Amino acid sequence: MEQHVRTLGRDNLSELESVERLVASIGPAAFEADVRLLSSLHTVDTESAIQSISRLTHPSLIGMSETPFRVFQRLCDELVLRAPALLQRPSYRCRNGDTTAVPFELWLAIVRHAREFFDPAGLDADFLVTRMREGHSSKEAFDALIASKRPK
Image: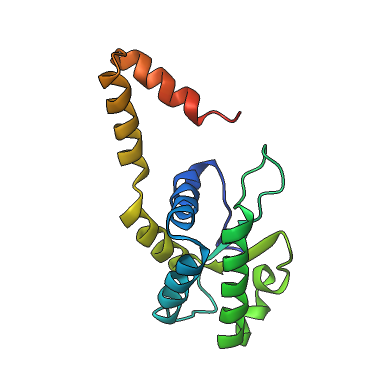
């Protein structure tokens, strides 16, 4: 089994949410331009940790929506062209229509960029303040926040 591979999961949903919100707000073309710029600043290390990205195939599974997923697929293809030795790693060699991969450090740079626009904790705080201004108690506002985060 390949070591140093991180997948999308419950522990990093806030990262995924930040990226998804950025794509929705600035549009796919601008997002792809930002990702390519960050990629050009990134030195490809063929031995570094990997962020595996799955496409959202079912609402009960954790995955990235179609538009940003396609951007990350193209990014992975570009990285492999820049550093063909990446194909020695199964995560890059076995990518397909539902799974792709990028270097973990590059993923973190993209997440940091996205969080400059959308901080999940800040969004939660704004939600709570809005509910309390509507006359809800802090407990009711918090319960509403929890309910809004549950899968529907």
